Image: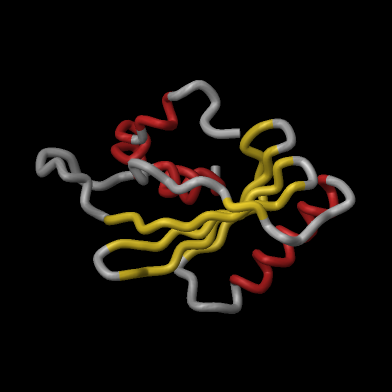
Length: 123
């Protein structure tokens, strides 16, 4: 599935920051999702190495991810519509796994994302 790469990269960070609420307000979840689609369209014309979404993480939780190369890793920018509420966060992600035995793969990232194993992640 094409939508699995960026969410797993986003989940790879040991401690992603909390979502910061946006000052923008939307009438409903559908309008918020349209805004995410517009952000994706704009981001694809910029210098991001990857742009993905929008896609549903859970009922009423729709997200997009934008990834920019930075230093020896990436900076991940994530926007979320939780219903009609827009929030955003960004954080750096190093490319190393810290384990010389295991190469960096999507599977290794998913195995090491401890907070992914928590009950439903953050809401």
